[in-house]
Length: 535
Image 1 (cartoon, rainbow, N blue to C red):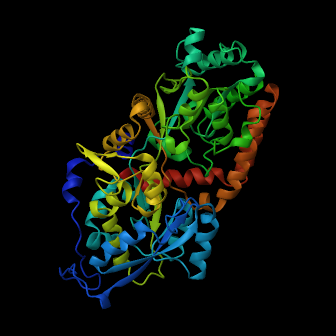
Image 2 (tube, helix red, strand yellow):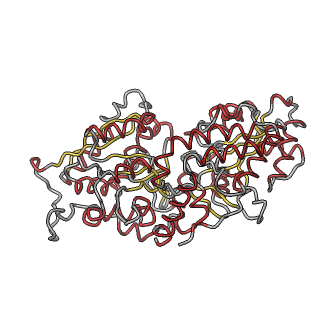
Image 3 (cartoon, rainbow, N blue to C red):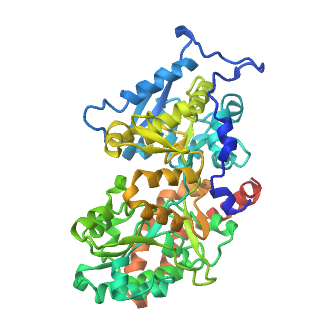
């Protein structure tokens, strides 16, 4: 199966036909075909606890994180299936510490989740989670149809045991390169297509600024994640799927000093940009979150920015271009196609894994069948669709097959703040196809619809380099050490003097060797050859 097949969501009408409300599931303790009826007596209600991220973003008068209109709606509906749900809040920022404590102390919810597949794998290896294959077959037809086998496989171990249920992403589009198109036009320069052309553009932005800004006022380039995003793709030498799988995620930060041989050239290019003043001199204070870069964006001082696929006009991320235009109406910060690889001239585009958070059921859960039954309901129109989109006529109206938002500000207050975290089985919204997702995004912001369509076109152009979410045993053990080394040396290598670059890069690679980077690569190769490539 090629990379495109794994990363694209090809569901279509076949999934639609499978989205039937589940009135029950086969008795997990009996091999008969008997199903539980919808009309459940009160004394037969199964109580479930479900982990719920608390992001501290509850609007005024909307209740609390585990008691509001939407948690009440859920229980009104799932009681028809013999279930009642109690939500257990966990601070999103504390998940990494809180989830292991809940597991080891026996206080875990019946349905837990984590974005860290390594953590979930460790729980599984220690015997702390239910194997879910049988329960999905018996109780999860809607769940299986919505998520799809190409996503479910991400929650299996080498023996094919289903230890987790990955949430399905509505789109794998992840990142775009945004550029000040109005500056390009004033300078009469073409859109860059290679790293060298980008260098020339950034130089002109900073030292020949068409708006008259002084060099110290202009930041040429800022990246959201320096490790494996769009500019880095221009330098890869080993782009076959197996090599990408082995090299692309050697730690949670994704840095590849011991991976693809082209990574040295990429970091050398970054070092050149830094030493020539074309990068933010303190970019390392902004790693991972982009707050500083966003401030530069809206002030009109940023020339090139790698950020979220729709980050220039997405109102949920601040409406950056809209804000910039309030002070500089003619400003245009738009996405451009990814730059070409320096070795083969092709476009390689970083995309997300088709899976997101990993759901798992601890052994402390008394009724795993009931847990799957609840997740199956979330995969239906009455479940996930309503939780995400709201009530027709109140929050949206249908335009063809796509729900169109009626009042974005109203929705933000009434439901959008919690919809992601209640809709456990999906990421980005309840949509049958990626095309539906993009069409909905376009309808949400009609004034900037051309920008949005352009963003998704660019973010899916070329050949996908996808995330996989797999961590080998040694990788899980050494993840914290590897991340620390990479965070330290990625900055040192980027900011050192030009004549110190090779020695510093070699020092970085040697530091990774102390934490078994080669063993990690061997384990990833074995996993790919023995399991992943056969799916």
